[in-house]
Amino acid sequence: MANISDIAKQAGVSKSTVSRVLNGHPHVSKEKRRTILEVMERLHYSPNGNAINLSRGKTHTIGVLVPRVGHPFFHQLVDGIGQVCTEQNHTLLVIQTQNNPVREEASIQQLRDKRIDGLIIGAISQPQLLETMRSFGPVVACEDHQDIVPSIYLDHEKAMTMLLQHVEERGARTVGLCIGNPDSGVGRIRQGTFDQYLKTSTLSHKNEWYADRCYSFEDGQELAGQLLTADLPDAMIVGNDEVAAGLIHQFRQHGIRIPEDIAITGFDDVPIARALEITTIRQPVVMLGRLAAEQLLNEALKHSEGTFSLLEPFLMIRQTT
Image (cartoon, rainbow, N blue to C red):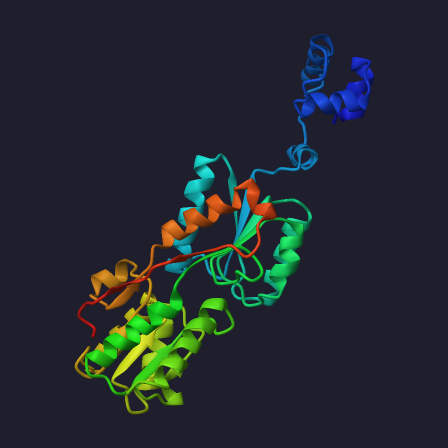
């Protein structure tokens, strides 16, 4: 297979001249450029795209770090990011971690080796990695990490407060909590807001009404089985609509009435929440993805620190509360 040295030798020019032609450098005479291109065609030379991108300092590829692509929230987030990538002729690399710390750490290599031009953080359980990540390239978080990297995120504190106020106003006196990853930025905020709210409200909570690392419909079904072994709380605040749907389905299988016996709220307002009439928080996830991608692709981002945008949540009151 022909290489740059072969082309330079047959064209009677230096390797640097060949390199300038490959990179579209303007300071090469028309005659030399034509000769080099003719030699490349004759030798069936195919340039190494990665090498060219590295020499230009751009890959036109951005990465997004998510725990699970199949999760409705991250599916919509990736959709929004992908829309901007398509509009701006960029490729999107999805890095799925399954909440595995080793995979989170491995994503740093993508930035260090310049395989991607920047990285969007959908969720991360090790925020301390962000400092290292940003030293190798632009990073934008979709969680509140504004003290380290630019961040665009939903006001989860306000959202959790809205849900708790709602079930309390509907007459609940006891409440349970189910979240996803307790180590993520979102998980910490939701847990902290829940704990703080209970200090000044009429609501009470027991440890047996708490669950975490719940992400799917099946997780909701399993949680229902656990809750049925004890007295039920008046309401359950659930971290996403898929889990809430599994919880509702399993409860109904056992004759538990929703919301008469227990009120249930979800989060995200994905289609299953609308189909099952689940009270939930609507957040503009696709827009969140678009905003994150647009900010990442802004060259000025490389020089920005501590910037953030806060998105407003909306309480969707339906039949489960």
